[in-house]
Length: 407
Image 1 (cartoon, one colour):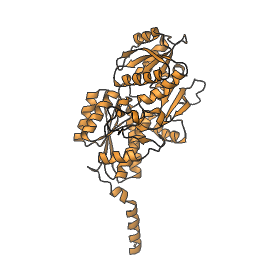
Image 2: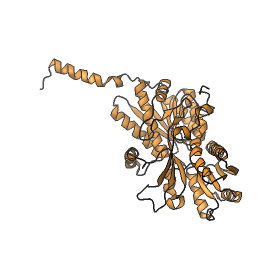
Image 3: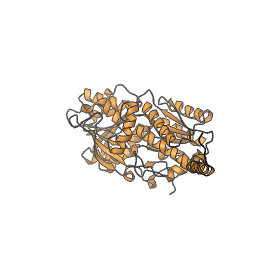
Image 4: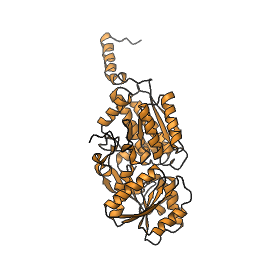
């Protein structure tokens, strides 16, 4: 049997203690950090969010626990079916009975607005990645909510501004009739008029519409140069398919502007249907070595490249977990303070900052969808046209209606 001399044993123990204090000092309310992912697992946003988001959050939890084996992280998930009442009830149940510390994703704006209210009431952190409405970090901001990946103002300052400045000076909107669509139409309209364009009208359609023929005919009869699609996911896919089937764009007098599109939408529609479209995105898997490295790991799990929402969920989960470790607690107020103090620097964002209104400000990218001839490999869909600095992409803090912002 090997004998340890006292001096050697003391040195070994000292070395172990040097490595341990950061973990030993973390005080968790029930011994575990529990994350609840509320997302769309079966509806029109399942591709951009859904199972891919759940997997991205689990990736972040696994990566964090490998580096910090003394901190246990659990991830649970549920399908909110794009219904605010189901989402808010599940959020309340999770917090009350399962001691969930952080709520994640919250795709669908009506869901996000409902859940951040519950989270604020219960003093739990809610990170919004999937939902777009700028209200989350504007008039409906809370001390416990973060709007991380993108919002409707960023889409307006990207695609909307570029299209109007390049000749698309008359617009007609085809708008999803709920909080997200209303916000996107409002924010893009403001950018269009501010840059010398005009809005000639709009029509609103129910969420998850299958037949867009009547809406597209109204858009066509408007005579507007640009038909702005203020919808997303399956609704955007169905709109573009219908426009193609009707030959709506053959005359060349009208063009579509996909105001919130994802790489998964392009993949579903194909390059023949989407080539030339301008899209504003927070993330592209093939942007640089770091995005390619992380996306390759994601691809191993999901067999597809990530949307910006799925990448944002990983990044924001990791940022939250690192803040828990740095704060030494899962207390929401202390963790939020640490999250705001710490810049986001990873494959997703450079020098990202969470402001007082909860908006995570980071660069966005204006991309153009490649033609089939330009694409050289699977998922090789985008040419990056411009980087939009975070300060130009998002609402200036001095214009915020968030009551947390000191004026």
